[in-house]
Image (cartoon, rainbow, N blue to C red; front, top):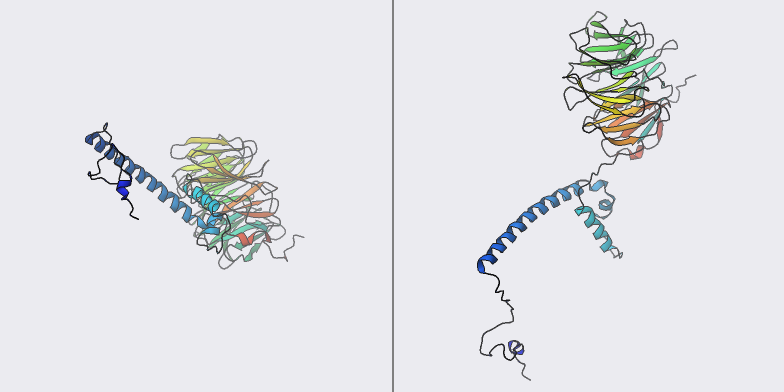
Amino acid sequence: MQLDSPTKSIVRKGSLNENDKYSERFIPNRTSLTFLSSFDKLSDDRILLSQNFDEQHAAYSTLLHSQLSQAPNSGLFRKTLFKFSPESTGKENQVAELASEEIYSPLKSQRKIPKSPFKVLDAPALQDDFYLNLLDWSCSNQLSVGLGSCVYMWNATNSKVTKLCDLGLNDSVTSVAWSQNGTNISVGTNKGTILLWDATRSKLIRSFSGHTGRVGAMAWNNRILTSGSRDRQILHRDIRASNESVARLYAHKQEVCGLKWSFDDQQLSSGGNDNKLMLWNLHSTQPISKFSQHTAAVKAMAWSPHQHGLLASGGGTADRTIRYWNTLTNEQIQCVDTGSQVCNLVFSKNTKELVSTHGYSLNQIILWKDNDYSKVATLTGHTYRVLYLAMSPDGQTVVTGAGDETLRFWEMFQDCKGQGDDGRTCLLPSAYDLR
């Protein structure tokens, strides 16, 4: 049987002649459009398409890079990326949809700050005293802590604990401070003496007298060791010189409880129980600036490593504020009410953020943005005032100490690595007995 031609099968009477050449392709006749208008519309469409493609391509590239660079921390990617599934689970479409939503969703901050410490160390006899500074972390990754009459060092690399010194029953440690090169450590005592130790050899180098009250604050400026005492004095000592002191500074009316040198070693900030914040330099025995805005003792101070001349200070229980200062113009930039006693401050080394620890009555650790002064995170765990604070040399971890006799390590600036170290270990050898 002979089949009709496909072209003939679509011929309708009165529409086309059989002798005319035609095909199955249908070309519409838009009489309302001219060639020029169509060409202009096509050009506009191509330009718009090109712009949209460029924008979408840039957004897609950014999203893809963000997702893949954080793949190890993503539960979805960790389970599905490069993994072969031998049989269907009936959930392929659901997984694909979730992955599509995750990749193409708007950019979100992937940073997560753990709410719990990744390590807790026992610290027996850690004093609950606002005016002391018993914790410091060296650039060589050694953490020093004053416990009763002893100073212990904890190596953060191998967790080894060594006892540096024991002052005996008649004295106690009131402050510790590492030199900037991490080789020497100074120990302030309740009797007013300062002991200078070579930490690498665990050897006492020198002993400085000069204060008549406890030494609660110390700060290093290269070879200059600055100390503040209950006797209201601030002393500069050049550890290379044979004499006892370089300079004596009198300005505070009560105990000096906070000292911090700026990162360029040009300005010294001091805080006292007289509610005063003062600025000094190495070449003057009188303060170059005095600030009286705080209404309680000023122990907490921190210089920004990111912005020259930016200083933050915190007030005690009757004040509860963090104040930001421009020390180049001697102006207050901002005042933030924290709601509780401010015990310590430290700026992040890696981000423009500030960590504060608090006492009465919330015992919190708070992370702040230093550009808009808003809270990033609030951490809790200590049952006493969080009186002590130090930051690791890489700037990723902070350690806090309190009268609850614990040191708590917080991974605030990177995802916590110490998952296997969760739990509680003792900072001191088991033979150590306070009795």
